[in-house]
Amino acid sequence: MSKCSLAVDIGASSGRVIAGYMENGQLKLDVIHRFENKITQKGHYFCWDLDSLFTEMKRGIHKTKESGLKPVSIGIDTWAVDFVLLDENDELLTDAVAYRDPRTDGMMEEVFSIISKERLYLETGIQFQKFNTIYQLYALKKSNPEILEKARSFLMVPDYLNYLLTGRKVNEYTNATTTQLVNAFTKKWDGELIEQIGINQDMFLEMLPPKSSIGNLKRELVSELGFDMEVLLPATHDTGSAVVAVPELNDTIYISSGTWSLIGVENGFPICITKALDYNFTNEGGFDYRYRFLKNIMGLWMIQEVKRNYNDEYSFAEFSELAKQETTFNSKVNVDEDRFLKPKNMIEEIQKYCEETDQAVPRTPGQVAKCVFTSLVDSYQGAIQEIEEIYEREFKTINIIGGGSQNNMLNQLIADATKKKVLAGPIEATAIGNIVSQLIALGEIADLSDARKIVKQSFEMNAFTKKD
Ligand code: ADP
Ligand code: LRH
Image (cartoon, rainbow, N blue to C red; front, side):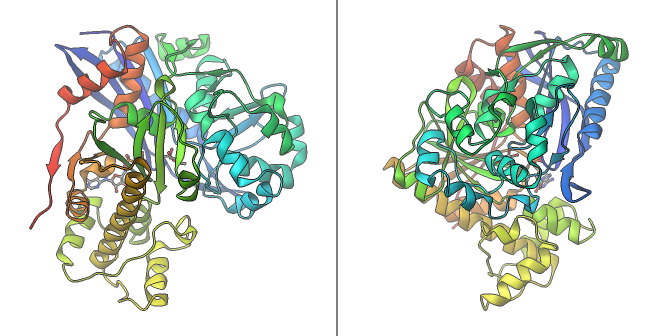
C-alpha cells in the first residue's frame, strides 16, 4: 500500500471525505464520510454555511482516524467562483454568498460598459456567467464599497478552508481562473483589469498551482484531531479535479455531470477565438496548466430542485424510472435560460415554460423528470455540435463522470441522440482527481498521464450505444 491521501470534495449538493491509496497498481478508495450541502438564506443573501462544512470536514478526518487509515496528506476542492473577504485582523468581512444569489443581476452589463466583452474574453478566456466572481465583486462594490476598502485577503471557498486548516492564505490557480480576473496567458491575476473595475488589488494573494504544499495542520488542529497531515493543493476547483480523472480523453468529449453539466475537452492552450466567445465556451485553468474548453449547462440542479419541490418523496433513481415510463411525453424547455437558475419553484417554472411555448404541460413526477432529462440532452447535443464545429472534426466518444453518471436513463438518451458511444464513470471522479493530484505531489504516481492510466484500470465504466 502506498502513502494514503484524503480528499475533501464538496459540490453544491453534497460533500464527501474519501481516502485513497495505491495497491497492486490500482487506486483504492475508502469513502469515509458524506454530508449534505445547500444554500441557505442569511439576512438579505443566499449563502453557503462554511462553518458547518468545516465541521463536517473535521468529522471526516476523525472518522478516518477511527478507520485505522493514516493519511499523510489532505486536499480540498469545492465548486467555483464563490469567496469570502478577510480584514487586516483576518476576521471575516463577508458571508460566503452563493453564486445563485440575484445580487449579480445586471452587473455583467455594467462591467461591459467599463471593459468590452471582447477584451474580457481575449484576456481571460472565461465564459460569461452572471455569477462569475468579477460580477459578484462588482455588485459588492456597488452595495458595500466600505467592505472592499477594508478587505486585505480575498479567499475562494477552498482557499478559506485551507486557511482554517493551516493558517496560510494563498489563492489556488485553477479556481482563481473562474473569477474571470486571471490572464489566460500569463496565468497571473490581471492587475490592470482588476484596477479598471475599481477593485482593491491588494487583497489578491500569492497564487499557487496544484501539487503545491501549503504546510501542515495548525497546532491546535493537530491536538484536536490527534494527528498531523500535509495540506496539498489539488485543482481546488471541483471541475478541475474531475477532469484530471477522465480516464480517456482521446477522441472524447467529457461531461462532468453533477449540479452542473460541464461539457467539453482538454487543451494545452486557451482558445479565445470569436466563435468560442459567441458560443460562450470557457477556458478554465487546469492541472499542469492545461485548459478546460467547456460549456456550463444547467445540469442536474433542475432535478435536484424538482426532487425538493416534491418534498423528497422520490429518489433520483426513482425519477429516472418514472421518466423512462413516459415514452410519449415530449415537451422540452431551454435549460440554459436564467429563469431556471434559482426559480421559486422548479416544477412550476418548467410548467410555465411549457404553457408559454404551447407544449403539453408536465403534470406527473415522471413527466417533469422526462422533460428535464430530454431538455438537458438537447442542450448537450447543441454544445457537442459547437465543439465539433470549432474543432472541425467529430468526436467518437462521450465520457460522463460524476454523480450524474449513475443516471442510466440519461446516459441512454445521450447515446441515442448523439449516436456516439457513451462511457459512464467514475462516479467519484472529482475526489479521484483530487487524490491522484496529491499522490503525484507525493511521488507515488509519476504524472498526469500515468494518473489517467491508473484511473482507467481501477474503475469500471458502463457503456451505452444507440438503441435501434
Ligand atoms: P455535485 O458535486 O455538483 O454536488 P454530484 O457529482 O454529487 O454533484 O452529483 C449529484 C447528482 O447525481 C444528483 O443531482 C443526481 O441527479 C445524481 N445522482 C445521484 N445518485 C443517483 C442515482 N442513484 N441515480 C441517478 N442519479 C443519481
Ligand atoms: C461545478 C462548478 C462549475 C462552476 C459552478 C459554479 O460544481 O464548480 O464548474 O461553473 O460550479
